[in-house]
Length: 332
Ligand code: TYM
Image (cartoon, rainbow, N blue to C red):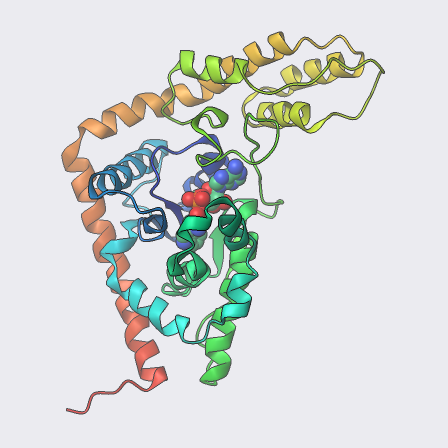
């Protein structure tokens, strides 16, 4: 049995990228391993949410975690800010994290480009906080999507640096995990990047989306010309539609549209209609369950309370040992 840690930022509703990149693996792993899954509300502070929005988003993600199938009895499900030991470990790790290496992180460089007016220190040290999240439970496996790969490499660096500095073998090396398969990148509907909320609400399909919303968004998805030559390579926008289909559609459906692509008879309208239908079939039980969980205040309260207790027990043990290693010892 291994220790697993992973989280999702509290920025509102979860989309299919979160589901297939991370949450699906959380659900599968909770039966086999010692799992800690959390809502990264400290990380979301980099975007300066209002108190009301922050609270609402944390609740939304918690409800959607539970609705998608995370079981608070099987895994430890908690809210990051309920565990102050994470912030304490973040502070210790920051002392050995260097400006040069932090400035080179791709996600940081992207933020510098996209939001030059809000390049705060929290963004710069984002991978350090993420490391603290993972190693506070001495985890070895981290189920995440492809976009988090570099952050995991930094987590290994920071953990190893601590071990070397104090000449201990305390923190194990954490690795990104997807059941032995490649990490996943779910594309957005804009024909370009990954599915994400920041790329625009219309490029993402949310687990709470109603059928008509799903259809409307998919109808607007970017496509290309119909191919003129048999068996042509697919442009990104079309490959993205096929990639999305591979997540929710049956293999004979995908094979059918592959064939129409290859023989140049593809009709994007038909493909989109089918994709919307299959996404809706996939999402409907989760969407229905979201409504049920959302109305069950006692279930939600119980879930966060046991999660907080279990996560703090593990985190406080680590912090005590870390402080002892660093040399913080009582003088009384
Ligand atoms: P976040 O909140 O952006 O995304 C949460 C998880 O969803 C995955 N994901 C995707 N996977 C595939 N395709 C996509 N389009 C897609 N969009 C999102 C992400 O890879 C991630 O696994 N820094 C993290 C949260 C975090 C964390 C951690 C994760 C904080 N501390 C410790 C693991 C361990 C983040 O911003 O993910």
